[in-house]
Length: 71
Image 1: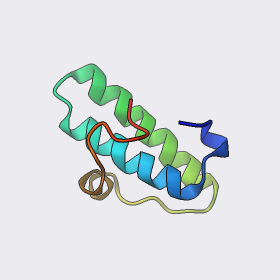
Image 2: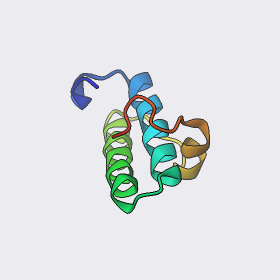
Image 3: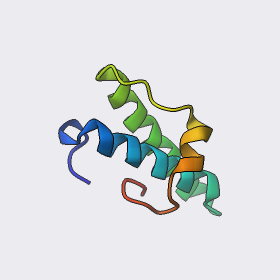
Image 4: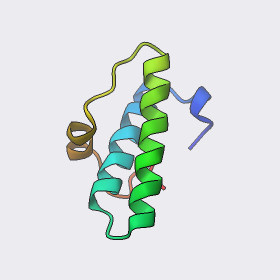
């Protein structure tokens, strides 16, 4: 993904959902932790832009496992 500061808010929303979904569904602790941290970064950037992100688990339900923006 492009630098977080250069990403559009729509890209950040999608990446946030995908990282949350991957964190929730990953079998390994490391993958879950990395994606949870990445989702938090996306949410913080959205909030800095004045965009309220979805609640974490709501976003996870909308996201795609291993989708764009997940790690």
